[in-house]
Image 1 (tube, one colour):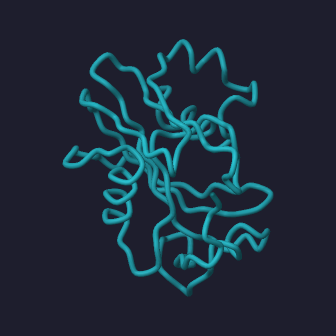
Image 2: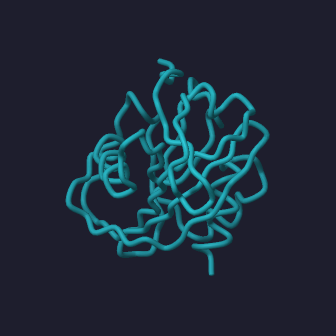
Length: 167
């Protein structure tokens, strides 16, 4: 498997206004063109947080544990449409109420993303898509705390967790 390097994303400013379009390849090539992504932090009623394991073939942060669901907003797609699509595609979940909790700009060596963060509580079955993810599971807050800073999680997840979730 491999990501489609020609997939189109909106290029946005820091307010989220579309100012152009770029390909996935361009977005991840070091150009640092800002593009929007959606993240869902999925909790169960015990307060445990579901995390996905990124497959080895991913072009960004392979083999690391990450936010339950995350994905790029396609060109012409709204944040809500992208979030519903990603949650359905990656986790097999439909109809869960997802609440926005913030947004921020994340920058790595290869890219800049405008990240729209949401959370939800869900006790049903999570059916991870084997074509998108290498599985996933619920983690306790204690497990997460013990693994922060050990290159187990993506840097994006760690900073987001510490800023928006851990409190």
